Image (cartoon, rainbow, N blue to C red; front, side):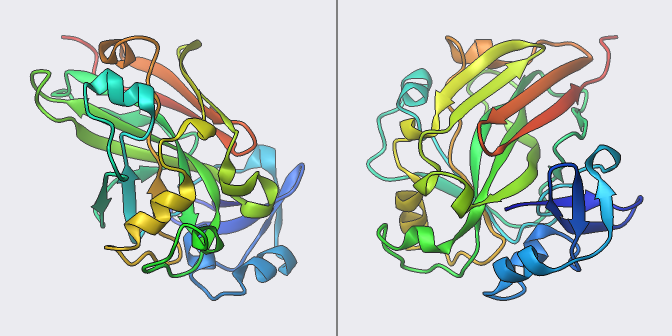
Amino acid sequence: MKLSTVRLGQHRTAAARLQKKHCVLLPYPDVGALIASGDDWWERAGADTGERHRLDDISYAPLIVRPGKMVAVGPNHAVRVRELGCLVPAAPEFSVRTGGHVVVGAEDDVRVSAEGQDVFWGVELGVVIGRRARDVTARTALRHVAGYTVVNDVAVRNGPQDIPSTAVATVVGPALVTTDEVPIGARGLTMNCLVDGRVRQKASTSELLFDVATVIAHVSRSVTLLPGDLITTGTPTGTGTGHEREVPPRSRTQVISVIRGVGELRNAVIRPRPQ
């Protein structure tokens, strides 16, 4: 089953079940609210009937409009670790964002302010939590997953190379693909990111240093994961050095992020024209 959050006018969104050529609206403002509505959310999502809209007529809102928590894992690809000059981590490294972060939809523009010198991006497998998880084991961790989505974090560096980058927005969507639709743990899925038609990232979810189950188990030792929380599992390297991963300093750059079997993001990164 595939679920999305669609826009119904300027200020209204709704969760929707995607069919081949249309979607069926569900009585929840977004997919996050649907998942948080009770353990039987999956059955209700598949059975509920509502308004139908042609897929050609809809606009995708962020899959989860206001995530309770976003857990960013990384680095989590061996080549990416070497690219950054880091030691291979002994356990998943992660940070937690709660509130205030900009989340945008699968086809939305991402606007960068004038002060950003370099723009970075990275396709990632997103894991949406479906059941509360605290101190779970890797053996049972996948029972707590609602499904998977595509994520791309866009960030800018506002100073020299050693200055950390600042997040601009996280693109999430276009759909949550439930666990029965993909391989166990979402392994073996091809990941690509293209910038203005050029492939800049190509990898597989099988190349993660720490797989989805291991990540959830590790994070749950210190963080209580709740339904609707989002985990991003780390971006692969680009083609060559980290500098080559930067979006060229153009006023409009098209970034396409694809995970086979999960979905595709198409976003224009827009920055002010040079003076």
